[in-house]
Length: 217
Image (cartoon, rainbow, N blue to C red):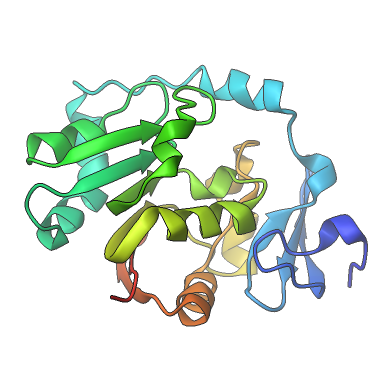
């Protein structure tokens, strides 16, 4: 068991963390309270190196394949949103696309991304919904950001997330998702269930990588 201060769980701040896996690049730990798997903070990239990775992403709003990928979270969100809802695409990246898809369906979507759309003003209001696709696995301070997300959404509002989830240690060993050095935390269904119970959220899993949460009215 690891007792070093920097190895406390970055999500729930639990102090019971066990070694989970190790490869040639990084050590991975698991919180015994919320089941989050996370990279030892000593093995994270600097902000500069992280940004350099993101600069290589080519997210094109006109790419039909990319739109199909995002439709996995877009379609179920559209089924649940009231007409003319206002939302925020958090971590929209250099080529915002999900926001366009939601706007094409009649919704109003603001953008925020710490590197590409650092619009702090967008974080000062409340929304009917919020989305974060392929974002949560990058967070160095998920406890702070999670609380921020809850504060951004009105009572009865929706949070739509997309991320690949941990299954077990055997699957993790050969899991390509962990090999992206900008991915530093890995949720499982149990982790989302922990958060939903703690924060009194309705929780739905759609497929293998879409998570919908609703704040109580």
